[in-house]
Amino acid sequence: MVKSRKMIRKIISDFYMVLILIFLYAPILTMMILSFNQSKSRARWGGFTLDWYLQMFDSRSIMSALSTTLIIAFVSALAAAVIGTAAAIAIQSMRLVPRTIIMGITNIPMLNADIVTGISLMLSFIAFGVSLGFKTVLIAHITFNIPYVILSVMPKLKQTDKSTYEAALDLGATPLQAFFKVVFPDILPGVLSGFLLSFTMSLDDFIITHFTKGAGINTLSTLIYSEVRRGIKPSMYALSTVIFLTVLILLLIVNFRSFKKKD
Image 1 (tube, rainbow, N blue to C red):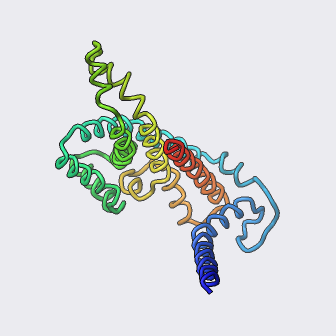
Image 2 (cartoon, rainbow, N blue to C red; image 1 turned 90 degrees about the vertical axis):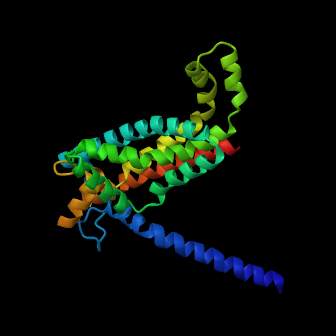
């Protein structure tokens, strides 16, 4: 009787998990299938083709948005990695109460709604007379990426032994030399994880980019939004598939690194 109840519970829980996965990933799978459909109709399969991917790479607007997206993602992730690492070191050196308060403040941007962050940044740029464009998108992406770097670096800093840094100072190293020789190698996995996570977050961000980009500039997410409003083209399926697979690969790398560190 007990075994049968456990079996029923397991079947129900497995069925529930399958339903969740279908609900989450069936639309994405459908989009990926349509990106290889020769027919423009979403209701009829016209055969396998790569024409939409070729059309995507031949499009100037898509390639321009792709280069803009990659530049913003890489530069913002790199800047966030530097600023976030420095901030994490400063926070770690604080006493318990102020450190707890600062960490709580740092976590707010990650919990805050993107639309609130996007509108507040847009209003800030306008208030200071900064014209919306590439630089404002870059600043916005650096801003929302920094907390993710801090969150990735802090656990590694807590594991670092302070005595090794002090020993390096006693042996004649300058504070900068001691940091790069002793501390930085220990926190490097956290820095890299923060960089990859920031790159991923920047790559597929839409809402904050939409409010801070101004006219004449597009990232892949904003381009897809503007194109879909005019009518869905099969090349958009191909572009969305490429973005999804890129983000998936980056997330797998980050999770693999985290899993490897635990082992």
